[in-house]
Image (tube, rainbow, N blue to C red; front, side, top):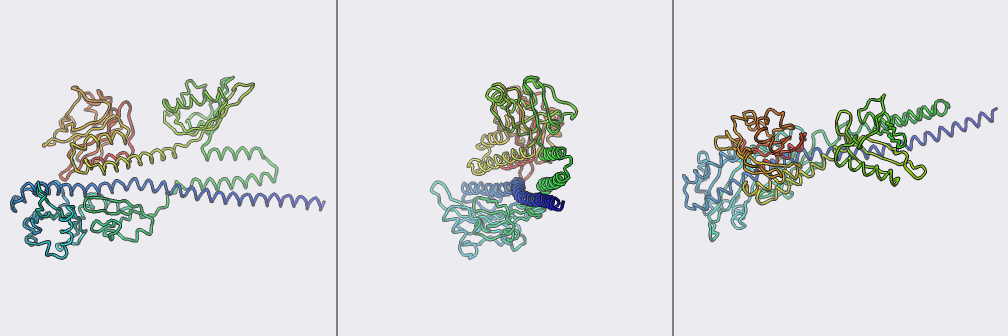
Length: 578
């Protein structure tokens, strides 16, 4: 008996040793998986923040570029009237201040000496300033003259208070390119930050900007704390005529991903370890081994959202596990009927793909694994990973079976990230397009509307501009497969769309997932939406200094569509280019 007792003790000791070693090994693997999951969640969190912050960078760049384009237009006007006086200069410059709220003053310096300025009040002391004799401004003035390029200085602290950017714009007279002089433009940096939403962004993020005097990474920081570089910030390069800035952004709460992205896996690891301990105790007691094993498999299936399924080709019976029924929102106490035309799968690409795979599995016994969309009992689309195997008996397939995993959350994030990348690529192409940069809407309208169609995958895109009294929206440009004819409205009246016109002036974006039931768009049904089969519309106001001057519309046909926040941000950014 003592020998037997000793042998049993050794066996139990071996079992315990094996178990604890295995558990320790599993914990090491779990820690490694948790670290990988954490890194992925952090990368995904970073991408989401990148998508959110990109719109602010685009708005800041748009604000700078639009102000520079205004002044370039003034340079052309001055070149046409090189002998203008203070009165005439004020007449030409005044409209610019109505368009841009960021302008503080503009000075005209023929032969490098300031002779004119607008507004004159408060800037009288600047009259007579010779750039060639002023040490602080001589170098920038000569560089602008000799290189025929805009030179951006600052931001600088002004004597009268506040910070500002100062742009030196050279003016050359046609046709022999004779140098007339410089335009000195002062932009209020605080108003630029406000319009671009930088102060709003700083409510949740640390923001720093590098590149004083337009020197980019070679310049010093002029906004925010340079120590932001210690927190692995996102960086954006902002390029404009006259220089480059680098914008750094880091969340105030740090880069730690949300708990919902990391704790489910950790809980799963803890649960698995707990189940292993429970299974080991049950194994030692030799009680209910099979029951506990089945319980573990069911629990793990629930955690991973993996269900089982089978189709018996001889009896035409269908089996779904409880998890498969949960994925399809199907009653747990019933089994589904034999499918006709694989109607469980979404019509189109998903149904065509599974049909071909099932046919090959039955005919050749081939297994398959593919990501597809299914339609649950609530008529909702869900992404799943389908794995299928064929059971061959006497040379023919008698049953196909496999697993079904709910991957909807991961797949939706992946698709949204792909959309974000496509939106950023489209915005980048517009940013470098010469027609867009010149601010000539007539030349860039076709490019802008086509970019909206391609990036948002819509059938139509259009641009509508207000008339002078802002009681009409007139069709300015469109792109799409459904071309209008004589029965389609070319002008939208405020009297017929009062709520829509009000929304344009108070909202950056107007979202109508279903245009036929949306109170803002239903008045357009008879003469615009119905003839063109437009079911969903997303509109963004085109901003200007005195308010919206029109809208850019993305028009989706044939069926309603839900617009995402990233799609709204993209269209707002496109509208800012106009």
